[in-house]
Length: 325
Image (cartoon, rainbow, N blue to C red; front, side):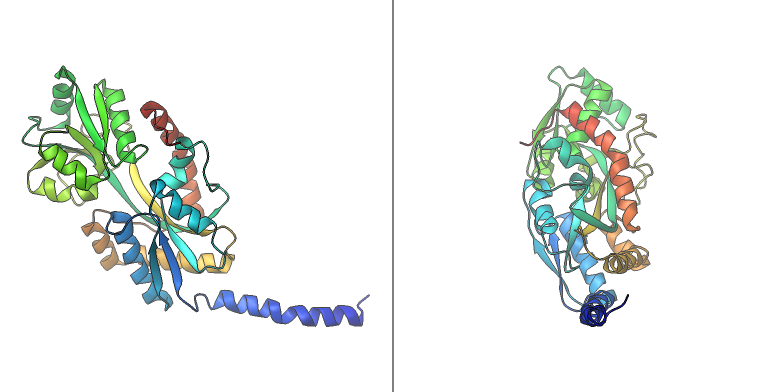
């Protein structure tokens, strides 16, 4: 039986419900913080800034970059996970957070399956097998493998650190092909490239974007890309499968995320904006100039990819013996 008390209570709650619905419908009505878990100037930062610029155009509010680097992206990821779930904090989380981190650390400050709300895929790019032209005589991947296996002292491969896709790819490559390879960690491609050009490092299987200029200049030779298809930035470089190494498809990728608990209407609006950005021909061209391919997806598409790829990365971590405790 409806009483006067029920009617009064309903009247009290109605304005709050209306206000919440209005806030969701009008999102964003103030600047949005975009936490980037990597330093300024790297590919993740550059592409996040491009996305922030485009989101501001489409949604009418500034998207303000805040760099929170450290611990392989985990510090920034944790900042996103622990922020208020109101739609005003988001950020680009890379493959490491979605599909690798749990296999590298015994403990993480966040739960990779419970603390994030995916918005959309953002970008992907393959790794590329590169070696210095001056010090490595091989002209293709088969010759490089034969040359590497014949070296009594073995070979060395560089990466931006333990647990990165470059380290895991290098370890898998050496393991699969019977190469005696020694991993040498650096802080990034800015240190790896000079080490190779000086002859102190044999090769790398690192993110393609950093190596396109030195390959085009002829100072390095690219033997293969790890994507399923050839990359537009290096169209003459074969895939690993074309070069004779099947079942070696590895792409670095990134997806935008909110903290868990953001209202669904806000998630959908942000996702639609990200998908529109990824489908814009001008934006696609700008991504390609950095070596990346723009991607967009429904939120669940991020979970599907993250879960599908986890067994592959778990096995690669095992082969590399990588730990970060």
